Amino acid sequence: MKRLKKWVFVVLAGFILLTAVPVLVLRWLPVPTSAVMLQRTLGEREWQHYQWIELEHIAADVALAVVAAEDQKFPEHYGFDLQAIRKALSHNARGGRVRGASTLTQQVARNLFLWQGRSWIRKGLEAWMTVLIEALWPKQRILEVYLNIAETGHQTFGVEAAAQRFLATPAARITRRQAALIAAVLPSPNRLHIARPSPYVLERRDHILQQMEALGGTGYLRNILPVPAR
Image 1 (cartoon, rainbow, N blue to C red):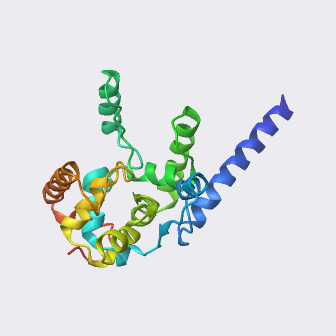
Image 2: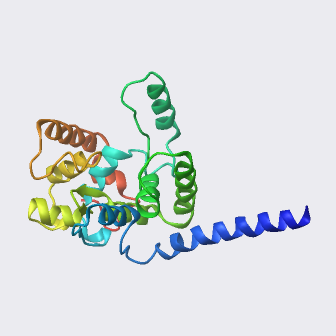
Image 3: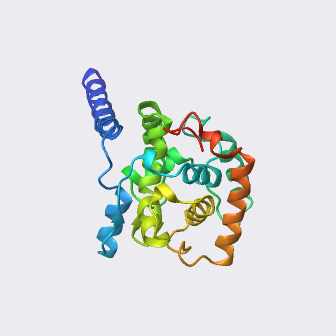
């Protein structure tokens, strides 16, 4: 029994170390790639459009648009939006299209470290990595990594690559409407397009613009953004 407890302790300690070290290292270093990028490369064997850029060089409206579209309680929660989870469970229990409730932190955990697909194992790992990220990274870093690794188009990752490729402008000069347009395609960037927005994308863009206004503008993220809100 003592030997079993020892092995359990060793395995748990090794797992914690194996998962915590890369999270801690990536708190400071630019992210060179992500699990999703590697999966796309292996599956499609195409060149990826990706360029790391610091948060201070991304227009504040982009950060606000993403929060307004994907995770409005991002400044408040600790990785999980329990209210959104309850609503999603209630909705999914009634059938129809499955609704998710992933926060920005959960999406970073999944896209950066894990594989795509649905399984309880991946969900469990996602929850654990979310806890680690929230414990070891400030909100500013979580937002910075999300804006750099989020899939924004076919083989396109991050807002800088999307801005350069689809809007012919650097991320620092993105307008509010362009920011909302980028956020509008995030749920399905291989089906929805920034350069050729469908009526659905334009409708979603306008809704995001309304949500950005309702949140109070970039001042909503004044405790997160690295520069004074504009």
